[in-house]
Length: 411
Image (cartoon, rainbow, N blue to C red; front, side, top):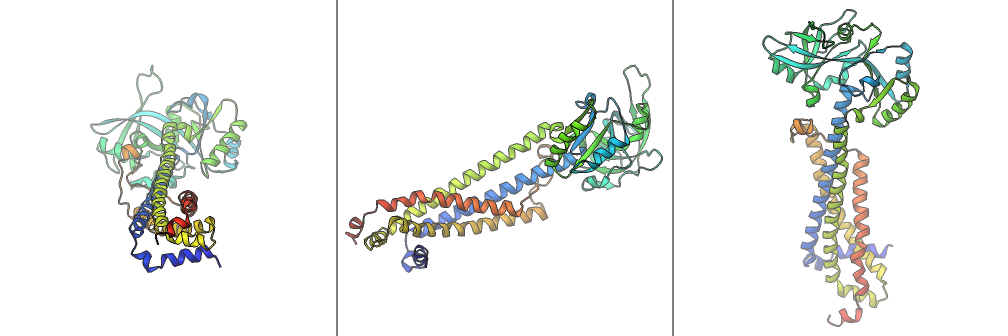
């Protein structure tokens, strides 16, 4: 039989304990632990959810890696073309961790409706382009159909459509210029077949998606010349590994740009979430430990006569410390239960109902996303319980200073 555990259990069910002063202190400690745990779960769920959502949006529109000439690596448009060699395309597809490869090119231009103008970047994509990655952003219409002939269908952002006052099925005129000396711009007619909304200003205010062959003809490129390859991998870790490998295999004039380098500011910003989450976890654990330590000290002082009696019967300090630590862990576990309940309720209600909304101009999303895996949940609970239990050993050391002769004298 575990004697300290048995004594701690009897203490909790002792009628005297239910009417003692420590009961109210213990209730406050439980509330503090519950609030701390719920705040930690909410912070982790929203922080990780926002990180993943922003990463997924940037990847969906750009790929994990972009293979392009060095002259194009610092530009938003495709300045120089690269030759679309079949063996290069196959090498990219067969690289470990790579799931998809797209041929693309970017061209700056001017889009005109009946009475409105808007500067845009036309992103030309090949017939192999996987539109499914943008399915979650499609708000109206459908994706362009790219067949054997050059398609005039485009996918327009809803924000640009509103500025141009156009709707599905409307035709727009686009103007493109190749050089400063070019007197007359290249003119193209496009038909709006779909609209997207990502919540990402960089995409919603600039990008129009259409047929790659338009850019090839405007730039007077050959059919086997493109602006870049977009490479999709299983995740960001695989992208880093594949990027390093491909950089060594590709010709010296080719650069491999990772998405976190292409959008360095955004990825640096979302990496700060980890630090913020860590601060919240530390603060909540400290608050929980302080409240539990206070409750434990009150419980020890309230039971000083019992401690003196145990010591007079030969019980050691360590045994008595374990009795109170068992009680402390039990109280903390009850607080963790309610904290987990609140945190899980928040997670599922936000995931399925999205009742917390954000400003997309600041956070790039309309609804606060949440993400919490089982191992995150388990690790946070075990970490909170483990660290707090270890730190509770410090206030329990006051037991060693309690003298049986002194406390039993006034019994």
